[in-house]
Length: 291
Image (tube, rainbow, N blue to C red; front, top):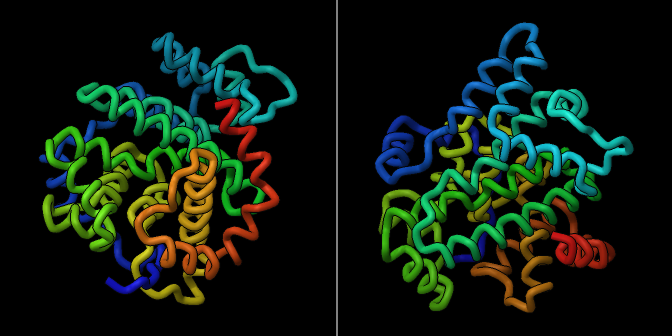
């Protein structure tokens, strides 16, 4: 298969009714009730912050995690927040929705094959942190938007792992023999790839298009146009590739399946990828050490 590039934002909506039905058959986790209720309240003409914060406060573990996250160096707040209502005021409802979605994601999946799932979520969470940091430093996206995208980017993988016992072997074979991107193998074997599956999950969890569209197209595959280069979706995909390279370098792992296509994509959208990443490597190392 040729090393070509992908437009990150095609004109048509990739999430079709057929795809949604297939995703339900595979078993993507439904939107958690607490998130459904939270979003319903935030969509009122004048949302009641007290009522919205009460919805989160009913889940003690979620409330504690929200406060811990908001008060972490990740958000860099000057004043420590002590209540969920204060956190919502500081973040704003859109950012809070993305934060809560990301916090609920991991627990939404079955705990089968615990070791493999722990390994996946550890990698996913660290790459998401680096994606958020790079997005801010390179002025690509809001930090919480980039972090949520990073967390959800590959969430189609645990869905496929949980549904198809041979998924890990298929993914391993695709990488080992260089026979083409893993998403091609996934579509041939399962009728859907993890990128579209993850985008569908993010969509059904009510995340906005700025998050789920780049999830659907995070594997470069065709020519990049001048319009794509200016597209925030393409920039978010490119910065997540930089984040994955940084994570792999920190773990002394090789680059993923199709590095020349990805390097060309990043260069077209952001400029020379390794050159953009080099001055930030020390900060990335500190982020990984603290994660």
